[in-house]
Length: 426
Ligand code: AMP
Ligand code: GLY
Image (tube, rainbow, N blue to C red):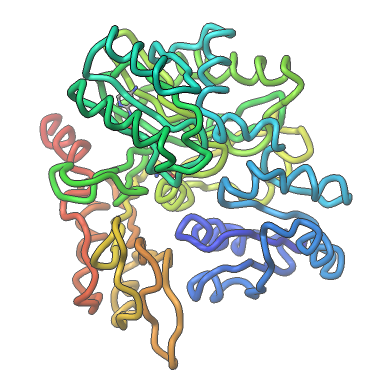
């Protein structure tokens, strides 16, 4: 098979790495990719917003499957457009990608199909949103409805913060994504990322992970796209997984089919495990980044076979096998992230770092004058496996010790919650 992978982050490097291991693969192309992806794929420059250009390339190179990494093109309808041109695509339709593209859409779906989630209100103007917040009080959560690159959520611990967040949204801090706002109940519990591979009718559980959103050690500082992750998530016991499938995922699959928008692709449920069970925080319609990196390290089966089954509606006949080992990834970011990262600093020592068995996925790198340089906020994902999360953690940090990049930084406590659990259990 010839495969075209769209995207350029650590998630896409992990997908490329796993697709490249498939005996089904003839040739892998990636656009725009990055230098890490370039070690397993031919990099091409396509404008992802120009769907007809992607289609023309796919025809010319006889692409059998297009795999879409990020949410932007999915929400913009790239899967529909490519399919209309007769090209096979892994990724949801525009109508199904509303699960990520509109938080209000997902909340209404939950209400209609009785899916456990935080109580909420949807507002198109400041006055009515303010009135709701003043009535419910803080803590409360304010969310821009649309895609805001992970920045549209405010956890307001006071009424003043909540009102300020509403004003910022309606004043255009998130552009059109904030023209509508979802206000919701503040949930407490432990968070988990839960993935399902979906073919429109069947949802196949596809691994669990825990992410670390805050930039600093001890979960301090501003939110990021994710500073590290590990898999599996200990809180997702067999019982919790079964409840999540029955109470959240299966009603979503039925509900989307009911609305004429069956979901095919990766469904990523952000869950809060509360005292009364799992509640949906939000859906994403793609793999998580950096969660994908740890999932790919643990997946024993051929990813390309599974993606094909999802595209062909054959998941009812499939299973996915996972390594018993834990996997953990530490994000190395460029100074300044999540604000404006410094670009261009030289990174050395990756071969030495990978020597001990770690996989180093590139997230934001470039080649400049023959040297590997930082070219984004999140730059490298240093990933390792181990019999326990603690062992995977030690191996990932041991690999980082070999990386010579003074302008980079990382959290020192990725996996802390699971490691504490392991210690308590030992
Ligand atoms: P998001 O950018 O939508 O992934 O949300 C960012 C983070 O905000 C989530 O990972 C949660 O930690 C937190 N969050 C979102 N909604 C709620 C909620 N209703 N209650 C508590 N925390 C929330
Ligand atoms: N790591 C969270 C996300 O991909 O949205």
